[in-house]
Amino acid sequence: SGNVVCSSDDTDMTQIPKRIEDGFAEKFGFHSHVIARTAAELQAIIEHNPFQHQPAQEPKWQLVLFLATQPESTALEEIHKAYTGPEELSLLGRELYIYYSNGIGRSKLTLTLLEKKLKAAGTGRNWNTVLQLHKLSQR
Image (cartoon, rainbow, N blue to C red; front, side, top):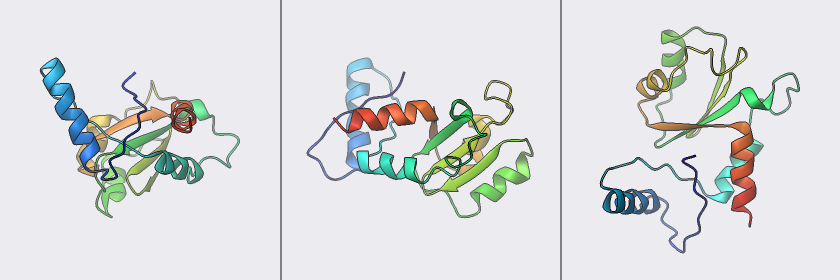
């Protein structure tokens, strides 16, 4: 699934993704980009979900795009200039919350477009996966 929950004594969160990437490259022979969040960060992501108090918005159509770096303050504006679909977007820190009102499979809002306009690599997880990852991180 591309999700891993792990623990580390290392407190420098900038080094953890690099160490995992290096280990992956050494073991499997190719590079894979890693984006990491702490259990506390996952908790904050859940608490700040802009769609959580909107019962008409189904969790299965909510997605969090976890970004490797903080996008520029104008990034959301750049997305809206390039794309005018029905999706609702909210950028909070290094997370882009997306609600796909017509379903994710039919959307023309692609990861390629988002990464280009955000100027940051990202990986998306649906809301149920975010909740499960948080639950696993609490063990």
